Length: 570
Image (cartoon, rainbow, N blue to C red; front, top):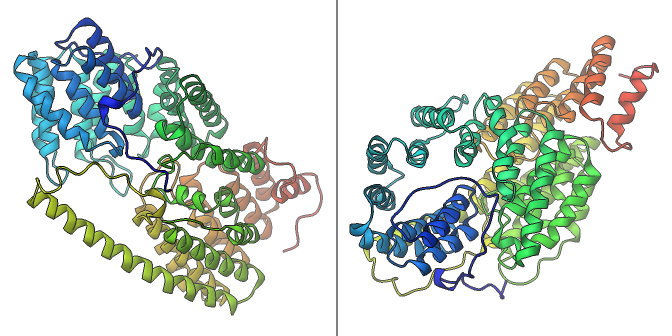
């Protein structure tokens, strides 16, 4: 990573080209007509989460009208999006917007005041900014953008039961009102999908999923968004349609504008989602092929593979690893990790991750082969290393907190320093450590099940399920294979068919319509002697996997059972 360079300041960004098909958002601001046009482009791209192009659009509006306060506001918003490596420039842009606000329109002033309140907020307290947005909405009720920004300032997510918290309820209510008044508003439809998808009723966003891509057809992320809802609902073929269309849109943009994936973060995010989606359809060969395609998409900064995503970090070790982990192909995991060589600086944590995955796969393979001596040894190695990694992560977190406090107490001390580029590949994130902890629980629970201690095993699996849920909602799910599937396989081997069935049903709540869970249920019914239930189960499984790899043993077995041949031996 020695070739990494700091992100240039906004004034050094390339001049953008006029873009169409990116949305229909607009705020009337005090600006020249040309600056207004570039501002609107930046605003639409901001709502598209396309920070690089949004920054370019707002910066161009500033070039043609440096006295435009809202143009500086827009630049501050874009640079703060996704905590871009250039985010530290946001404070400078916001300060300039504040300086120029005295000559701005009334609504402009309120937008800028709200942004200042957001910037000064402590501990995610959006109360002051929300109050200003409420004032903005009351005074300019005709402006859908004001209502959208108010809704987003209120968003506070869902509780552990999948129900919206108080702020989220109001956010949803406001977005509903915007969609009633402006049903084709691209930003509102985008935020509606995000507001609804983590909860218990993702089907409420189906209308927006069907509409959004047509409102912003050249924006890769907006075309990608319908896939979120279809994946959540288990309609994997329809999700695939939008993930593929998103890739086409992104590749056209990168090809025509000579832009790399580090400046189009959606490209890799979309591929990671598409790979996860293909796996749930049993299309492992296609998932592996798309994983290989990631090799050409990892740009100089590798920003496009998220530091906070355990799934993405696993792909840093070896691109096909998520597929092998999803199907529990422990030999493939061990082979891939064993072939990896880590060269250069900043690979310490990747080596630690590879070692953890090696011990996890070694232990899981030992359980499958009945090696109840090898599995505990691998588990012990994994847990000892995991403890050391967690201690180091705590120390690094404490050091970072102390550094942040020092910067806060001495704001001028670091003012002259340029923004630092984060060293993404060397960061072992807290979510990744939590994922490794879940794997540790799975391995220990499997050992208990192998020893016949089913009650203790179930308690530990339950703990793993709770920890998996605590990872929160991610796109795609952060934990690659649901804990329920791992538990079900262990209980089925122990001939606890009722327990296995319950575990598969838990897994299917997260991945509805997944062939893995459907096959598992059919297999449990077969082994428990429920021939009729097994046949129905295998029919459901094959219906869910019409395009699965023909050579998969699950597909072959289902066809064998439905072909009238005898049930598998118990």
